[in-house]
Amino acid sequence: MKLLVIQDNQLRRTVRAAGGRLAIGSDPSCDVHLPDPKLLKHQASLALDETGNWWLEVQDPSVPTCLNRAVQKARAQLKHADEIEIGPFALRFYLDPAATAEERRTQRVQKLEKQLKDTLPLDTIIRKDDDRLTLPAIAVTQTADLLAELRRYASVGDLLLPVLNRLIHDFNGSKAWMGIRKPNAREFDWVLGSKGGTQPCKRPSYSQMFESRCLCGRQHLCAPHVPVAGIASAMAAPLVGRDRDVLGMVYVETASGGTRYDDDAFMRFSAVAQIVATRVHDLLISISEHEAETVSTELELARALQSSLTVDALPEVAGLQAAAYRLAGADTCSDYYDIVATRTKKVLAVVAKVEADPLTRLRYLGELRAAFRYAALYQEAPHTFLRALNWLLLNNAGNSIHLMIAEVDPSNGLVQFCIAGRRVHTGRISPNGDGELIPLAGAPPVGADRGAVYELREMTLEEGQALLIVTDGAKTTLNRDGAALGIGGAEEAVCDGLGDTPAHVLRDFAADLADYVDGGAHPEDLTVALVRRD
Image (tube, rainbow, N blue to C red; front, side, top):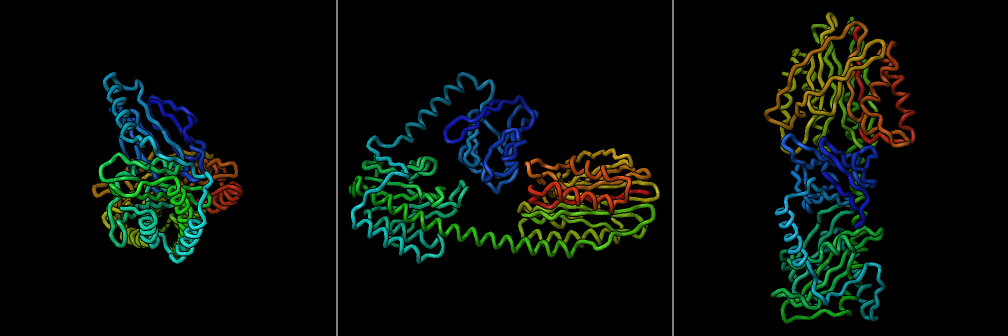
């Protein structure tokens, strides 16, 4: 398999692989490193299955990942010559050997057909976004009036129809259309077509001919003669914000027998597009600021609830010592831990990472604590607790909980545990500092799968050994050089302090962690829990 990494129409890198899994993201450790801070550290991955097929797997859909211009939410099979779009990068996927002779011929024919279909009329006028505009005095006055009019609208949605009606009126159009997207987005967040007045219409099909050039090439286009039945002439222009981000495009066309656009009309149309883009940019800034305030408030509420649910003092059970520590994430609040003593003098511990929208996260934190305390009171086995919790929280919205729950018997060191999902890890640490991470079982997170099966697993703690539980917030905890602490790094840091009580071990761990992230980043919660058998 060969992957071409293209940016700004230039080949930046070629990646070859015969199998396995390739990580894609802005993290320098990724196999396919995309150096753009606006992208996620682990955006997506490519994986080869047992049957020899390659798959694109989206790790986080919050930043769009497109396959052949279609936004992907989860998993999609790749074919030869597919193109993956992530931010400003295009990743072209080629199988090796590429294809059969017949397949290559078919692909060439299809490519030529697409080129012919997408070819603009020969007399199309094309301008770059930074070209100077020459306007008559009356046009300057009209654009100034338009800017003043657009200031009346407090939202992006409100200004769509007035702008489209202005285009239809000023350029004798039969239809006009506009699409606007938030910065760094692939899909349009606001779209509207109009025939004038309050008559909406579907997107004019010919506008799609201009989309790639407007959005990717920042080209202003005027087709004086459109060779399509029902259309006489058409114009399109990108909406470029103050920071040079392309925020969308506008389009206008005339019906057969109508106005044929010339260079003067094209100049005025480009000026209108610039005026509209300026106002759209300001409105999107306001939206962004409002969303940031909302996120900040939601984070404060989640932190307050998380703090109220955190135990003040861990239980004292003969033969066992327990301690837990959580580093609060700067951007998200997701972790929960609890350790209680049961009536049979055992210790029941849970460490969880909640993946949900802000409001659901608050509910999940509360329901998780209630369900866990109920299980401890009635001495439910870990796998029974997970089955009940999965039934309680089952949903189709993508909300879930990754967790590890363990019951530790101090009399014989038996640990019975279950792991749900892949974001909470566990291991056993010896008094001499040797660590042993337990492989994840592959069970789905709680709430994600109706038919989930949670296996009850066992291990034994000898005297002096400790049970370690850590969330994968360690993977996004970075030092000033951008190096991730990782699960192994957290385990090693804990092992360095063994020989002391768990409380003192985690106190030292917290101090070392503070030094590690000084000048770095810790966007999400990192939780570490220790239960040692004395």
